[in-house]
Amino acid sequence: MNTILKEKITEKCAWIGSEIANKTNWIYHLSPHVLNILDAAQAKLEANNLVAPHFVKEDALIEDPEFLFQIDYISNELENGYGFIVIRGLDANKYNENQLANIYYILGLHMGNSVTQNTRGDLIGYVENIGDKTQKMTRVYETNDYLPYHADLSDVVGLLSIRKAKQGGLSSIVSSSTVYNRILEDYPEYLGYFYHPAWYDHLGEIEPSLSPIFSYFEGKLACRYLRYYIELGHDRRQIPLSQVQIDALNIFDKVSQESSLRLDMMLEPGDIQFCNNYCV
Image (cartoon, rainbow, N blue to C red; front, side):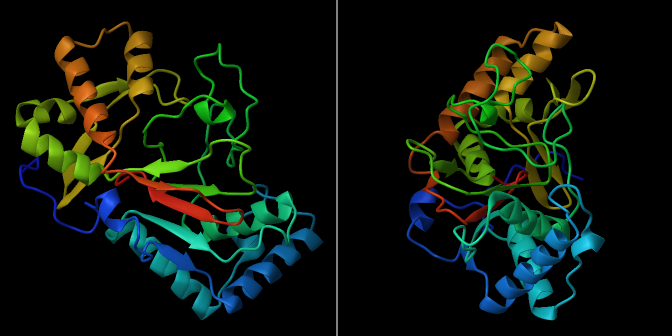
């Protein structure tokens, strides 16, 4: 069994931002029927004084065939398509923040299991400038700092736009398979270092643990890249990164930041973005 992929990835997940920016096949519109189903499920939660994330799937279980078909479509796109999807149709002006959170969480519970966002155990995180920048454990999305390319720790991460920021707020993503292809083509001598485990501070574990940046299993490439948390993990373990490791991280950053590779999007209120963290 090959543990290192040495061939170019040609599947849909290896997209180039400049080539798909004007396409619409990564945008999915919820049907009016499904929107009504979600509205009814949300109203049931509200009648029972339940607010996300303080309910389970059974509290808002939806067995409607059309809804389940759309959930399957979204999940398949995340697993076998581009690795991300933008969902539109939800009217942000129709609901208050709790109601929007309920609908968002209902979708998530029908796609999989919710996991914590941070050391506080939050299942839903709010992108707001409320965090203490002097604390290393503060999540960057809780500040107004620039958030560099990264993959979160869950299988899938979701982002619901409630309102636009007064300034900024652009969401930029890049295909990790495309980054891999460029590294394979231009820097093949460094490839092994991306498979070598590094110490990650996973913000929830007591101590940093080992994870590789790239792994290849059963015909699929997985990527997990959070440079800041690699550096923090090595710092906490008191194991300095070697110069070759630093060079490899610099190469990853250089390639991922190529403007032609990334896809920029401004999420409108009500838009939902889901990303497969192993692909994007």
